[in-house]
Image (cartoon, rainbow, N blue to C red; front, side):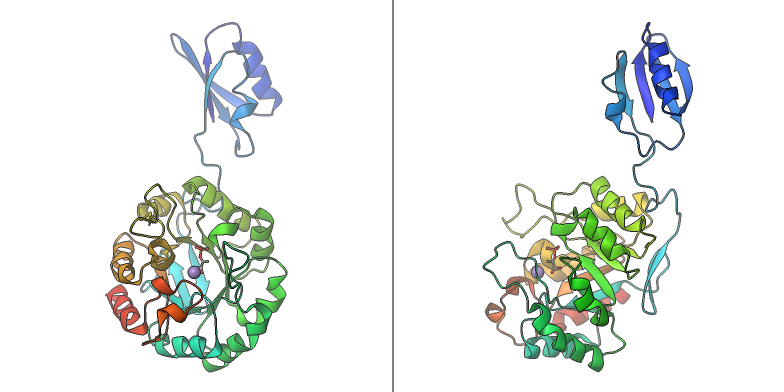
Length: 331
Ligand code: PEP
Ligand code: MN
């Protein structure tokens, strides 16, 4: 952190203030201004601890607020899901796919059967965070037998489940290999740490209004529990154009930005970011071109009436399109 200050009688008091906080200083004096460099770990300091002091013109952070998840601190990193490795060294992008929500046993089992040849990891949630309390909230505990059946049929396929509340962890533990924190809970720091302490891999979705730094600080909350098995997922942000031709605005530029700033793998969700099945293939291809480590995609059974789905029917593709996405990803 550096403090740019006026070159006048306030300097001594300012330096005293910094030294009292146990930081050494490197002072560079120009013709009109003084630049004070703080030496030490400044991550716990707030700019506001200095900006109101007499003579201070500007306070600037040089090192990032996050450390454990930064590329600077950890030049290479990978996450393991079962036998699959995701991140800086991986054979091909990871395909996570399945129904948005498990709605019926038939819908879930048909979907998983059709996509099993193309999906590395399954998703299909029991707990659904819905904007309205009157909408279908997922089968919740009542659906657990369906996931047990999926596990029995496909023991080699890791399963992702979203956690809305720490109380769900007990229910989900036996059928879950990867927990997902959805975009609504990215800012729920107690939940992030509670899920972090399970030690299982975690997909951390970006809140639709989150800045890159806020997202990485949310990941840092998980990392402080000792769990570095974190995968970031871009799922579209809210802009003034969201909803016009896509549900959210896919922020593909964040993919290379994250790869520079952080050691964590980043995947892309073309389903929730666009909201349209016919945009999924093109956006998947674009995200992989930009270096995404994988995709998380909503799927429904071939020939299914999408209007019968209670959650996100418009964005679900079928195994026919998923096969094309998966083949292109492996190229
Ligand atoms: C989901 O993946 O099903 C989901 C609810 O995503 P998001 O949290 O990004 O809305
Ligand atoms: Mn959904």
